[in-house]
Image: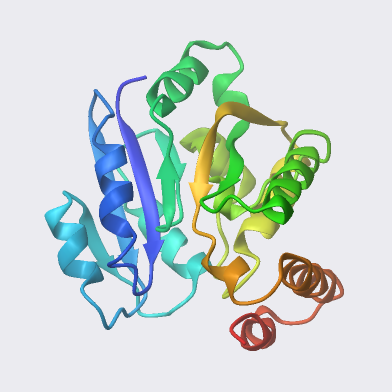
Length: 228
């Protein structure tokens, strides 16, 4: 694999972003990092520039719009979408490059294994459940990242300008035409949203949000519940 474009939507992520940007520097070939800021009031933009990223400022706050903007301006054929509070494993480059050598690499999307940066029994159970959902149910979510070739991304129609559920919306369309493979290495996400309430309460809240979205509730309405 030659060039890689990494797109990261961000909002007040000055604390987490430097670690992710450092992880990305392990990529040995041409690398483009695009951070799309949704109106940060901290030093996110400054940190992104210092980490070697090109920064775009979205006129609308929301990951769907931010990702759409970042991917439209990207240069390389291989695209990697990551959340700003993620950490890549030491051997992530080997696993991403392996996809390029596979005949079907461009014909399907790929996701990382889900990990949380806090070692609690309930979070280990959550990781196991997410693993089942991803591998058997073909439903990885945004905090597992997404590696996809531009030809497939364009074919499925790309991200939509949604304030919430942009990842689920894209994955549902991908599942109709392609499998979603496992990269075979972990992407570690921050435990912050699992620390504000119990794992079960957060999982229940997330499930309710997904159910309401599938029933047609507008994403703009759901975002108010999501932020509580």
